[in-house]
Length: 174
Image 1 (cartoon, one colour):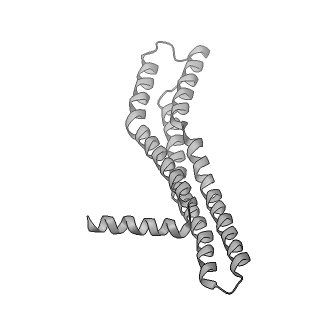
Image 2 (cartoon, helix red, strand yellow):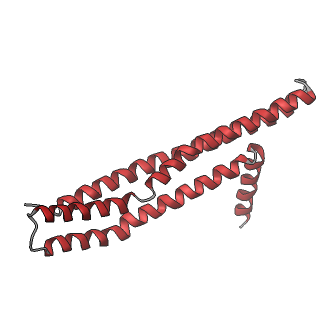
Image 3 (cartoon, rainbow, N blue to C red):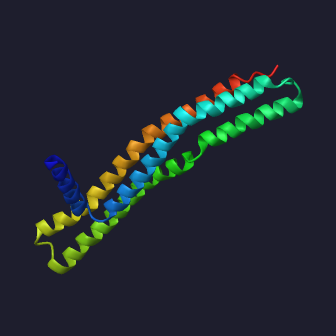
């Protein structure tokens, strides 16, 4: 319990040093990972049931060779692809937004530095250092948040593509 309180204190100190923009970075990061976990859950738990149903329906069809059968197959594969790709674009957008939010923190931190310089002059390096920290920490946090999502999103897209190809391969059209 004591270490949990220390962890919370260090997070609060980090946010105080980096400024309020870090709350936005944390919110975007949280939303991104909620959506990533939801997609991973769908691919591993819900999609196999959908895939098996589609394949069973295809093999239960008497006609798998006509033009209409090919269109039905294409529609079923497209439906599965659409369900697999749900929210991928939102996740990719959140990944791309993280560095931009970090840059917003950079701008607000630099504004604080310039305000300090205007009011105090350049004679107080301690006050300027606080503003520079407020400028660099959000950029770093935004980049780390982005990098944490880039790798997983790439792997997620690969899983989706292979799942769609695997489904199409299991529905032969003669």
